[in-house]
Image 1 (tube, helix red, strand yellow):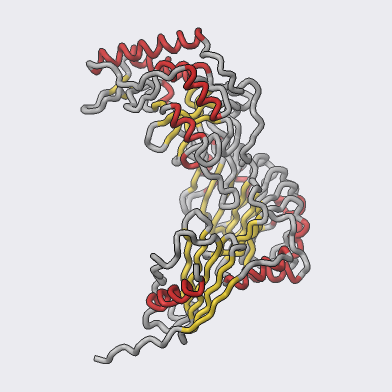
Image 2 (tube, one colour; image 1 turned 30 degrees about the vertical axis):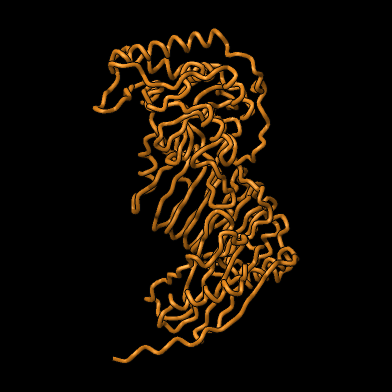
Length: 533
């Protein structure tokens, strides 16, 4: 690949996008195998100028090396094309990742300890469980046939050898009742209603989904990006039964509703849970929820509903919509949003389930003392925006983990000594900020303070657990000038627009490393003058 030739082609594309506007232009592209992220802007010109759109189709080859690419085109036609494979991200902000294996609380890395008793054994399914599940499945099939006029169209059951082979590939022995279900029905692709509005997939799909992305997860949690804007992990409903983790190696997805929600058996339950319990999770929900203590219980509830006539038929649909008890479980949002202008005290007092609220976000244009949150004893995440003065009294919020304050004034002394707060974002403050109280927070892992006046920027070096930091370029320059490089950081984000050579220089100073940077310069011929009418 000829980077010089790519640079010239890209310069021509940028000039076409700039058109007749007399301005320097910048295009940045970050490519790390997860899709291209781009940012483009004009350095000068009236603010009403629209954003650039640079067509990059066909410019870069399929085997494009990972890294950050930058084109700077000056108004006189000269350009500088730069590339670095050592910068993680440089589109609208610069991000440096020093420890890609770093995880926030509740985000375990793959390789969690295997719970006792779930190793694959190859022994046949428990005969008693097979008889019990077989009786339930048989009754469902009889009632389905009587209602629909034909038998359910299920895939043939799997053999013991096929189940054992799948277990070997996943590395667990499935619960006996799930094994029994696969022995009897290989797959319910027609979503007949055997698990109400859920259906189980094939063993082949189970294995594929388990190994797709991170083990033990699927869909929205397949790829954990812990250095992004990760929030606290909330308690599942009901609490105490599912471990409070973002994903678990020992959640085995086996089906879903084919509409964004998935079913998994939990082989690693919390203290009050039961191995083999069934959880539902998906893109639309902040937290998983328990839908049954076992697969057997779910099928029992479906059969009970059919016996009682609690079902609905839809014309042309081969599925019976069974109104089983677990379909009536409320899906509770762990967050409470207080509408703009509402009185926070009245809004919080009016929460339908205050004991379940784990996050509260509000916009308030007055003075706010966090004592208003004390009725929400399960709070883990608070976000306040638009306030004049915030007094973050958190003594009586023992579970708080994440806090965002966007206000004119606040006093961080009120946070002193909080044992669980690990995430803090501060913005819009109009006064110099003293960070010294944060040194008393034993678990403060992530801090974002870009845009603030921090007179003693070297106080960052005294935060014992700090792993992820967001600064602006001026703050980082001052920090480096003070001699502190924060070697314990897992990641650093520099907010705002940062040119690639500047980002490379920041990284060289932070880690005293030889950072790769290639640059190519050139000049385009002057564009023709527009014809006069």
